[in-house]
Image (cartoon, rainbow, N blue to C red; front, top):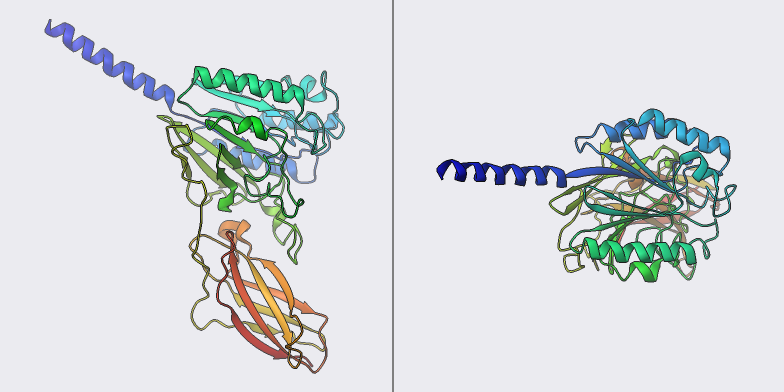
Length: 416
């Protein structure tokens, strides 16, 4: 009896540790690889080598659209070659189509995507007893990129997965984010959104969903890149290059944008999902990992309705400096402010002495937060179009991702 008891005890322990070992695994999520664009091949190879060598030991990869720059056959061939050469033979690889892939790869059957990569446009797979759903864009149009075929597939597979795995997350991948979820999907005055409503109503029925999307190229160091409301949304960045929202003086491609390559590693252990963000150019993890804990019914959402009321601050005694002053221009220089998260951008107001009643000129300059570890300690901006022999007052405000504005630092200069 004692031998039997010991045997049963060790059998239970073995069974438990075996199940636990099976339940813990990791996978890579990247997007916007843009093979065919200048420099993208090297960026993709560097990214894959870096992510594969992380201690998470990923076992699969999901590429969430814009595999190619224009959907040409030679670009698909290059994509296949890079991902075949850089990933182990037994490594699970899953892909879906983005808008760039659809530029020259149209139709709903026998696409270059299907013939070259050997995968269906929409896919449902299970890995380590977790469900995964991939939805391809049907065309490059924003308002018609996910229509009846995609919606039907997603609805059916979500219903199936939610019934089979009621207590687990359901991982969903599509190129364009759902409107007004993650950073890059917001509608500002009905425009400036990289999102779509094509799958919104379906996703909102399933709080189990953890949806990954790309498309915007917005940097994942901004905490708005995770969103929870009816379900969880994740912006996974871009391998090819970074991009930022419109409306700033630098435009959507500020200095350094082309050197930003990003991706995430998702680890699952005991139903806890950890999302590790990486800057693969620098070979470094970005900030603290996000964690999505059970129960996966929406009640444990911690990234929902987040509010940050703490404004950035400049160090005591900091003032702007002025260099290269000419008759009609001046170089403004200042040390960066600090924040409990990140300084997103700066607002600069420029007023001419004697014309205080007029509205000041306003410039908006990104902090360079998207450069992560290489974010500069100081910023500068060239002020142009000034009048000669005139004195100008300058105020600089630091603003974080949630719109909190610092007290300004101020200074004055006089043109030649």
